[in-house]
Image 1 (cartoon, rainbow, N blue to C red):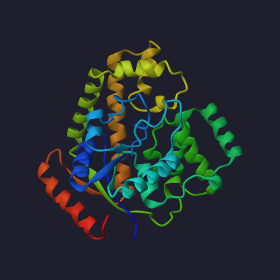
Image 2: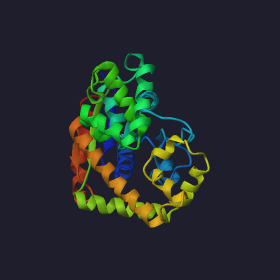
Image 3: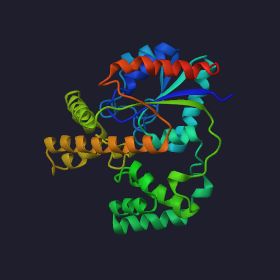
Image 4: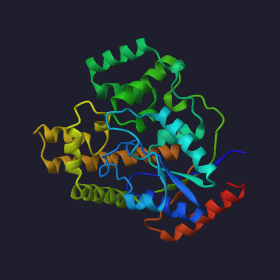
Length: 308
């Protein structure tokens, strides 16, 4: 019998964390972050990390587990998340994953055979690095878009490491990164998706960014800047936009506007990924809070098919 794992997914600023806490209280669960940036210590504001008070209500996992100098990727997430799921189930609790990093969740739930020696080649990696140095990061992302539009849609053009890794997988294996061979799905998963009308979502994103600035986003970025120029966490939205600000080539208002724009574009990529790559049951609690009851009924029915 496959272990049951519940997930709450969707674009940024749509209420995933609040719903996950409610469901954890209702169904005796613990929460696992499925966000690629919340693993970093000290980056609380820009990652919209749940507060200490919220974490005191329900145990949370895979938050604040790395220093900002450390790399984090899909393979490590699958290992870390699988371990957390096992530990939570040992305590008789329901694992609830909440987050918007669709590539991570697809790898976990669909058993994608990612990475490893079979998809790695130092010579190809060096060749790609040389191409990027010659052509630039945007050209490499455009190359990925030509060979695998689905993968490109989910990878930020600024995330040079992930772009090059996807191209390496394609060149070494001949398979598109978004269509890697699958192993049997390891979990019995129910994936709840949250969304709302697009313009309302964009308003919520803009408001969230304004709140981040009011709550200390600039100071958080000053701290991150002092950690060095090659910190992996600088690739994240809410942080990379401050690089020209600290260089004196961009004012704060422009920086905030750029964060809002990048966040909206990211939300669009998130929705595209979840709709096209995963089996999601969608709800709109922002505009229709009455959908909370059928949502919880769906979770109850899913749990009753077998014991947790």
